[in-house]
Image (cartoon, rainbow, N blue to C red):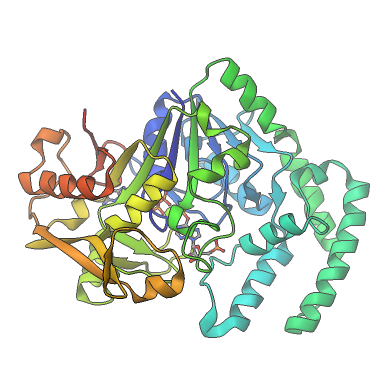
Length: 425
Ligand code: GDP
Ligand code: IMO
Ligand code: MG
């Protein structure tokens, strides 16, 4: 069985935990998009892993980890992760494959991300400052891009770096009055990356096709959430890749027809980091309560996450967009302790009720949420392991979400640990 795990909200739905659980039965785990903007948390016993570029399957020593062509790779972050895993006794030797076609994030991408955001002031996107947008922009622009394959040919790399750095220095100097960068220093850094990562750089598409032919179990790990998709999310408050399930084919060369199951992950409520419209946001005591109970602070940047009620209009849209077969809902345990909970079942826009999600920022900023109020629960769910043992109020909450979203909820998270998951037949 091949399975693709994708976030259906604004990221941080708990994909890392679910991928780790499913990786028990996978031979290969593939990241196909995004970069070090992602932060995927896996908790095993007392150990906590926060992975940014490495597929979450890395913590299972038997799995092969693939970083495919659609990912923008910051080699510095990757090396830190490899070293961090090694310190915890987990080696990536012989089981990490990085696509030669994956684009490389360099210092100037991070610098541009920060300078541009600072210059935008109140109009800023609220990026993770990891250089993601500028790196994808160079990829689309082609002439100033560097890929992992470029680490293989030092002479050509030096030439390219000199040309690119001369261009960026002019640009950043004119736009931001930035101090010039030194191509030689960047080249030395690249040589160090090449020494350590060179042996991992391959044609991952060829590897994946052979794996499919040999009927290996492959798990595809989405980053971010579909509402941050460049084309189908809440533009311009999105990331710079197709992070919905639609990015799978371009991101790793495997068409969705070879994937048996698309598993969409949601939280029992909604969160968002960074700017942009968020119809069900509770910028009040309720939002604070969710943030405290759910420890809703960014895995990558530590920023407090904005919190709100579950938005079934948004998730019905992203489930459709991703061709999602099943949904895993995390953080049910977090919602314990309220008399009532709300689920947004429709929007009112220009006096008309609609259940279709308008991703246009201006329209989304104006919608009024129509909520269904359901009874809450006070029981601690963290020890529950069987669906039948969930309180009736919890099952009613799940059934209500499922009715509005239109996709079965087959997995329920009741805590951050590996075993805190409930499967529904
Ligand atoms: P990802 O980006 O989708 O992998 O999610 P993150 O790791 O950024 O954020 C999810 C957070 O929720 C992490 O701190 C997880 O440990 C935690 N988590 C995941 N599932 C559950 C759950 O069912 N209950 C609780 N309380 N925490 C969870
Ligand atoms: P995971 O994989 C939550 C958000 C940023 C910002 C916008 C653009 O952990 O779910 P970028 O740095 O990508 O240019 O920022 O996207 N963002 C995320 N939010 N989880 C993520 O990843 C995110 N990756 C990017 O906060 O609003
Ligand atoms: Mg995250």
